[in-house]
Image (tube, rainbow, N blue to C red; front, side, top):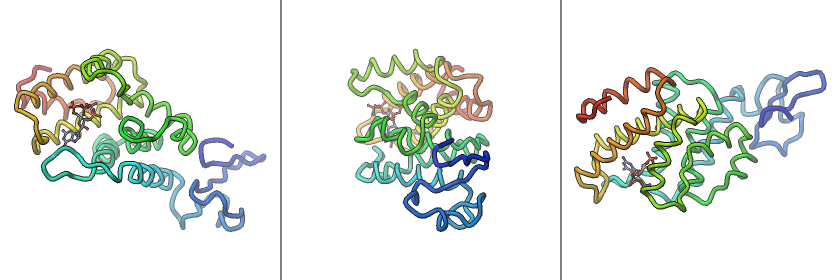
Length: 219
Ligand SMILES: Nc1nc2c(ncn2[C@@H]2O[C@H](COP(=O)(O)OP(=O)(O)O)[C@@H](OP(=O)(O)OP(=O)(O)O)[C@H]2O)c(=O)[nH]1
């Protein structure tokens, strides 16, 4: 087995198969060696849809903190969309990790489960962007600032997009129970995390800087 969901034949010919249909026979799975079982969908597209579906199942009971109580899945979908549509990221593992980035932190999902379904690379990225919820909140916030510069490039991309989504969301509306002061503190803290992520993606960093400056925060 090579990449998750990809069988590498003895001839080195890559034969994709869909993780959702791994119990199907070879004959049914492949129209040809290089087509995917789900019609003509590319392997990459199918892997991303699998991650979106997994995250939707895991977050199905959760809502955002905004007054509309937006379904939580809007957040990971939006983070992945920022990466694909704004930052021009095409790396499948990064897009999958963006979709999955809050599953371990905020649901009963384990890292082993992420690895089983999506492979080691995705697991590693999710692990890097997951806060240890057993720590007191202030400690977690400090750790994010301290750890940011040491993250891998792929994890930094997910973190930048995560912060961009949350800051835009704060501009859009205030979460229930948040004072103006708490909003400002979140912006300030986020700017300190982003400082440790710089040099990763100029598009995302420029958009974040625009938000920080608009909020009166020096960059
Ligand atoms: N702006 C905004 N954020 C919301 C909303 N609903 C949920 N959140 C989440 O709240 C977290 C920020 O709130 P905090 O009070 O600072 O953190 P906490 O939830 O961990 O206590 C973010 O999650 P996080 O994973 O902790 O992200 P981050 O703190 O690492 O950036 C964000 O995704 C919403 O409607 N608007």
